[in-house]
Image (cartoon, rainbow, N blue to C red):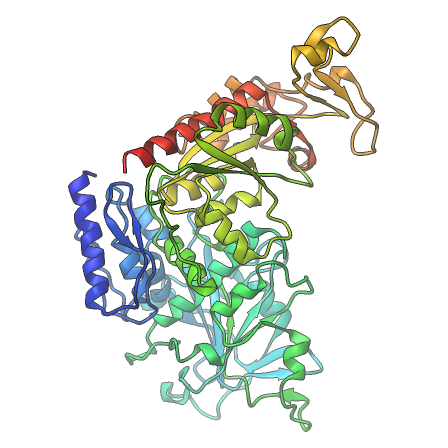
Length: 603
């Protein structure tokens, strides 16, 4: 895309926002210098009838303004159908259109489920879902379940419901999560029907006076990648309901912002709150409650041992691991992600943090390079000592090098810290999720991957947020030894006459975390760095071009580490420690520093 077109799109986006009289917006600049809005209001705007490439949309109701404005900021070449359908506003619109009722017409309650295709699934035709339960819903204290009068039926495979799936095919997901698991464990459907055939008008709609209860079971509490995907999936669920009309009306299933104070989130798991718990308040009028807390806060009908009066509608949301962002085992060449951009902006707005940094009055500014230091599994040995020192020695005149440990830092501060980062460097792990909070299109991600892992999730996030991406492999440490480069002087001081080479291996005590020290085990099972790069991606090419599945070709000749087929291999890479040559590490980080520095100088 040429500079002129980028400028036109930026100006068009700004003009639209001004015409809509949105709230006062911060400003950020694209990589071509166009002024772009940094914040979007949450009001509704009229339907967008065209996507810019001639394709018309069929959304019945207006998209939230954030999406329409953010879509104008997509400054890449026209997106493929896959990118539009998976990461653009089309994803919401198609999700909204594919819905079906799973209760018979004479049931007193209604269970409507929404479905979207899952192109990443190995099962052809697989779909991801969320469900809305309404009418005559109560909570049975004795069963500890929500109850409703619904005689289950499968939707017709013709007409408007042809896209739906049978009830039995609604999916559960890992960690005992997802709509099917929640429906089975926390919902009891009674075959209660009206005396006669029920008319559609007998079924209540979700009105502004109805309460809304969200049933949420989390996967984990402390892994930002898992948690962010769950929170984004809940956002998707509610936004789909905001653009879905009631049948034969122009009223949305969920009103916003009127419905927010009446929305309650019930946590069904027993995990600790965790660092990201408060983000759920973006969607509700109160802090999420544990099921026992919620029950204690309600009035009980003693005659039925149930809670009825305060339950209007129950949502079983889209699963976190079904979130479109969670496509991590294959490279995705989608240079824009409207949904991710809106989600990130809402987090900044929730915390009251400006999306962009204040720029120095006299450029160029010094770059900030943040090294993520891991304290548990997958440590890159020497990162916080000789590797960081070597980068400072060579690039200290251009960049400030910082060591950070996100654990224990309030998430609001994590977001602000990530925004102020120009280059994020770290061993493969959830901390690299912070890439999405960096100032869009102005930075770089440097990922050190375990040997032959070939994981693409964070590479995809970097590409979707406009950041350069650099990757290289590190070698596993098998046993209690690791490579520790030292100066020749330090080697001579070792006293064994072998110089620096003799001091290159540091013996660690047998601490029970690995086999007893054996020098032959330090490098026997490692892989040449160049071979790794050819198998996964070129460290100098943003995004890389090779598939994870190339690992399968190595299986026959690699009995020790069968990456693609053996579960125990995953256990090994997950827990072990890693080493990387100092000169290769410095060059990798240096390439990222030079790339971002050149971008800054060209602004």
